Length: 183
Image (tube, rainbow, N blue to C red; front, side):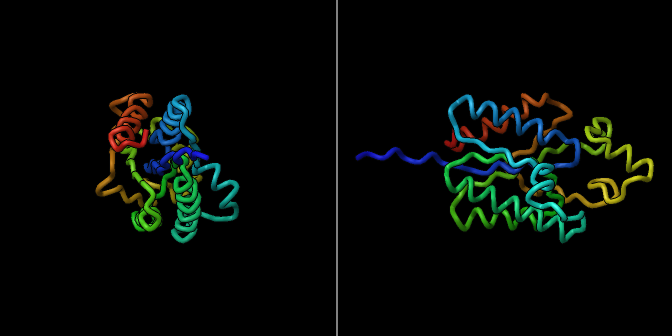
């Protein structure tokens, strides 16, 4: 009996401000990877918060718990041969570093991608109306406005989405994975 070698999984962690383009890039990338025959999962931050992290608020501790839960699921999927794409704000460097360490312990590839869209551009996009609600005084604690966002210091890739289309951003992430022999 011959066995087929298991595909190499990895986690692509897309971090950035609200309305930076993380989810759009993740969906485009996932579609391309699936069309190439890869096993892919997208762990969208909003969906995970609604189900896996229901009941958590937006305090630093709750945000850390949410990121750690997402990180655990991503690592398990990636360790088992799934290319896992994670579009999530994850505002704190120490939370993201803990996720990286979890991947390092299991020898699972992890790539932090900074969707480095300036807050002014995100505010104009305002996909969910968060910036408008914050400006109207209806929302407190908006990441990057009145709550901190600690940008990655040394990401595997930084995407300047104000200068490229979502497709071009997804293509850059795909090229990074290809350069590392994962696709």
